[in-house]
Amino acid sequence: MTAEPMAAAPASGDPVRFDVEYPDQLSRLLIFFKWLLVIPHLIIIGVLGMVQYVITIVAFFTILFTKKYPEGLFNIAVGVMRWNANANAYMLLLRDEYPPFSWEPGEYPLSLEIDYPDELSRWAPLYKWLLIIPNLIALVIVAIVAYFLLFIAWFAILFTGKFPRGMFDFVVGTMRWGLRVNAYLYLMRDEYPPFSLK
Image 1 (cartoon, rainbow, N blue to C red):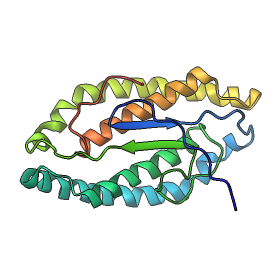
Image 2 (cartoon, helix red, strand yellow):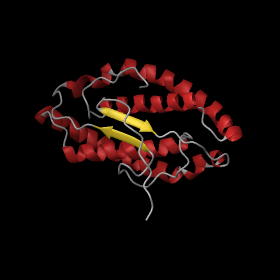
Image 3 (cartoon, one colour):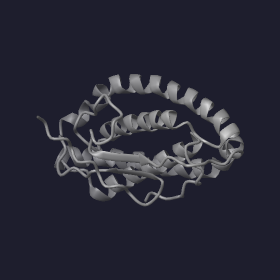
Image 4 (cartoon, rainbow, N blue to C red):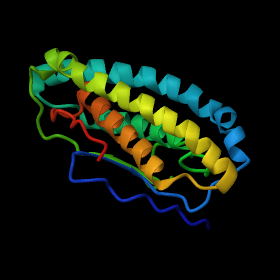
């Protein structure tokens, strides 16, 4: 019987919560190979991304007529986002444990939870793509900074076996921001994502 890794605590009271458990030590050797080892996950995530696209189209019409996101499809969409987050946490050097081929919560030392909405705005799917543009521009700038920090963190891990905590928190915050934007764009939540890493 193997012990399940503890999931990180939710980040806030936001309806989209994401966090990654900070590792005490990281492998100095694994940083050379993670990009190669994650390829099977990236292939599956590519296929699941197409599934999520179809789910979003179905949800679009369902929300227009019923103001509801079908709960079963919502759970699949959250699962796809969780699988992607697991693979990204590994690929971005945040964790050394190989991600599971699963979207179930609690199987990797990170948490991603999205609250299911009781009701959604009927007309919001028609204009969300336009409202999110300023948020996307800001997120791209923050992501560029995060990738620069990852470059520095790569060397820090190589020499010390540790991901500097401030840089780690910035990268996790960037992922959190991106997941909130995705939940908004995928029509899963109506709350406009905050311009925030927290």
